[in-house]
Image (tube, rainbow, N blue to C red; front, side, top):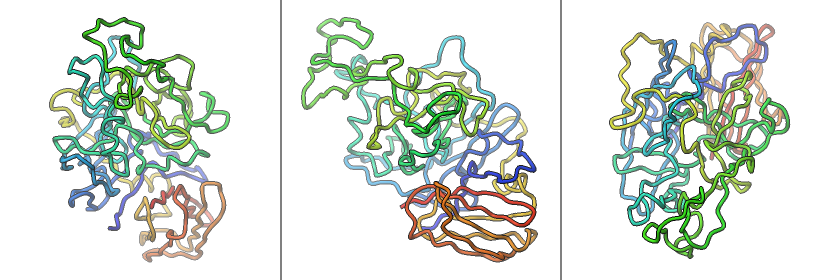
Length: 414
């Protein structure tokens, strides 16, 4: 099934004559600009992005554009959640009582799918002391994209969403792949080594370490438990890692803090931002705590968490973000539509009738190698690109005339 999907955050400039005033919290969403559907014919990805001075509002079905399922041993079925989330545009650190990262959705991936925390909401003997690690207990039932639906049909990822971005690309800073409800961005697994935005690109390492235990009679902070509160003895059935309390935060042992984030400079925030990261190992396997953890770093927007959350009512006036207007703000002469993106085989570009004439298109891979060009492209005509022979990953489409140029990032998937 071909989908017409535009990754808004992918628009870059080669010649910056105009600087768009929109910020990443508005432009980093995978917006369904047509009527493309995903699982069970449900409209996929983010439906509408609106914003005002203080908040970005994201309307979504919680159904991704990529194929999902099956889920071994899981009888639940994904359904349209009709979510509306509110993301603070000017996030601030919470200097008062911190908000715990609770159960259910704790953030939203850039395609409108829910972020869930590390727990599966169950504990040993239902005591709430030894809490189960969802990746260990539910992981065998995840689909190929490492997601699954819960009882109410909310499809979600507890760990790095493998089909959302190229998590094997260790040579570039990872993109923003979501936002927490405190307004701070969630990045993929790779970033600059140094927080000041310098150094090589490295994989972000969690500072949580697996404990060296054979019995579960103490908590990670050293608190000794009474025998009635012991967890199961370590065994092949209950190996270390099966429970959240099998891990201990050791400051400085990795790159990230106890929330699985850090303050740093990123391509989207060159002046610095607190950012969460997903964590994986060298073999691309999820690493505890997988996404952000423990407490939100910032102040959480009302209506995003708690009973009935995710259905924020917008009461004030807002501006609807349109990917085409976003392109036109940056460059008002090269006007085009490129779809689908992500692309599996063939992609198509169409130039608006009012666009410039004699446009040259060049496609580069992530290392900057030129792999294809088309010249003398004209308005009102559709052109095709064959990506079937390209490897999975990130590519860049450069469009230029003798007076202006624009760049679109392209994601090639299986």
